[in-house]
Image (cartoon, rainbow, N blue to C red):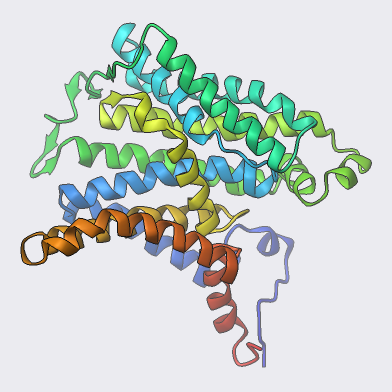
Length: 353
């Protein structure tokens, strides 16, 4: 009796999805993503779009923190660079929205690389403080710039000269509907890039630095080059999340990219699973859906039990902190490890022990 997965060719062993069940699971997920916007209402699409943007940002942070071991508390600041670059180019210079996004990604990668220079000498808590300083410096620079505290109003996204709000195909259309396809296209490309990145020399160098940077250097890994490359790659993807958020919301304000944003994204990858691309997506789903459920419960109790409804905002903060503590104590590898254990149980049955 066979128990487990046995490969007889190099092609099957090196495939991204090595079993028929894994491939069918991907087909099912893709089918759900394609069907959802045709049956979901505006609220559902808003949550789905938030999940897509958070997943992209979490993958970017996970490349730096989960795969390379460089702790970062500057996620909010780097997202602000992407959002402001995209927003200002579209609002002030009239650059097409689709061109502002790659420019914003490159600008964020450059800034992230500059702030990654201290990573050669700093690690652990000291590096976290350095990236926290980056968060504060970026926020201070935005407030002191000509933009000031005023929000940047981003022009509506258009396709073939038609605003997304007015673009309809039968009963389907609207900004949320069309942005759904834009966001999930970028999310798909980000996931594909990240998964394949760690099958290359560069990705394996990132992992070697995370596991033991001294041993990696002895083996010939250039720490300075690959740490900077990790910061640049992570910041590029984080800038993409910021640019998409700015274009989707239609308004960019520094208050949306505070230290709380950095902590939120750190919680996403902790709950989803450090060093896991799929874990970043699981964490994004979890961290967007749970507050939405609590908020809906608060609205449900607003008329029948207003005292309970008033406690919901505090309950959200309590659930946020308690969830992080429970995952750190009970399952440090996050939701990705829980899902992996479930799959291993059925794959190895009847010898699951």
